[in-house]
Amino acid sequence: MLEPLARYGRDEPVTLAVIHSISDKTRTWYFHTGGIYLTERSRKPYFKWKEIMQPLLDDSSLASQPDSPIPLQQVEPILVAGSALRTALSDDIGTKRLTRV
Image (cartoon, rainbow, N blue to C red; front, side, top):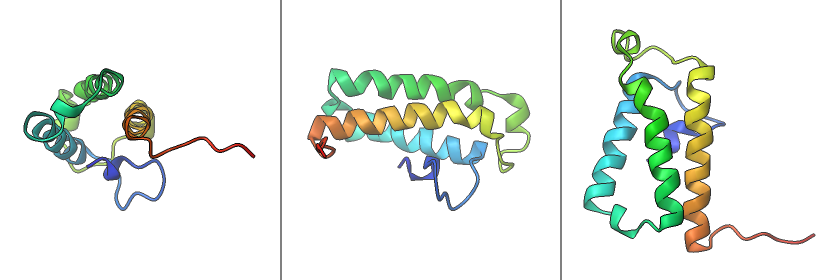
């Protein structure tokens, strides 16, 4: 669900329409599928990420052009928070392990 917010190699620019779509999909996921499984460690980054997205979702100037690319400086906090969320989720299930060199 977060793939459109990948830092590198995105297929398309981040637009308000993209953020709305991701917000809707993750809300549905939270209430119908996975939210019940979030640990306290993952719940905090999830809600922080949602909190950071909300001002863009409420921005009337962006709403007038939902398919226009959003400037990187506005998208960057969402990318950072999304990365923190993915890290917390992967830490919960142990998919990213530190290896010593």
